[in-house]
Image 1 (cartoon, rainbow, N blue to C red):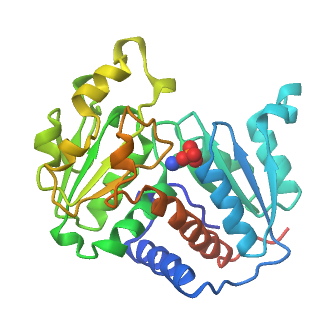
Image 2 (image 1 turned 90 degrees about the vertical axis):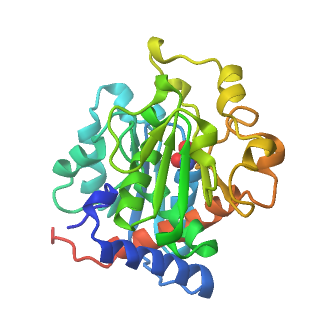
Length: 302
Ligand code: CP
């Protein structure tokens, strides 16, 4: 049984299949119907885009959707997370979309599915957010299909960004020409899988074809990693003037949620170069492609 955990567990052919299928769903608005299959969303961290888009994607494919809210679940009566997973699998939930603050929690949950439920990683700690990376690449390819010529810059809180990790994996796989990683010293990653790291915003975004800003992840910062939002904006916020360092047709992206006036100025966010809400729109089709791919795999019998 296959699961959807991280970019590195996908083959290049599988990545291309998901990109093609998401584009097909978007272009044709023609979807298969998987009536009788149930999907559960199980989010231990806040979410708007990811949870709602998986919910909408599932409904478009004819799935039944149940929302398990850990805040009011039996975990408050002492049940452990792994028994919540076992419970969902025992009720014939076929797909479980999980977000958790702890790295690799969706990976660990697989051991409790009894081979009957597929786990979809909707973001684990600072580790990975693979569906976000795929929808970001889909959005780039719609406007700039020749990845071998692209200079892509990712700016912000790289140390805590699961999106940046998944994007590095994906851009390395897809052989993007150049990846620049920009962060203040206190938010530089301990490890870089792909790309060149700099603390200088201008150096990082000069002549870039795509500028991806990251959210400042207040909830994950240690005492030694604190940086005042005003100070961050003063040095790294994407303003209209700074955007002129990039190519004139550079795309501005952000996985969301955006802290307006911190990572990106309002006028940049609303400029024709911003594709931030196109990312959100594409998220539904990419998540449909992921669900369609997982459902097409055979399941163990009870
Ligand atoms: N990009 C992203 O994961 O957004 P949400 O936290 O709203 O799901």
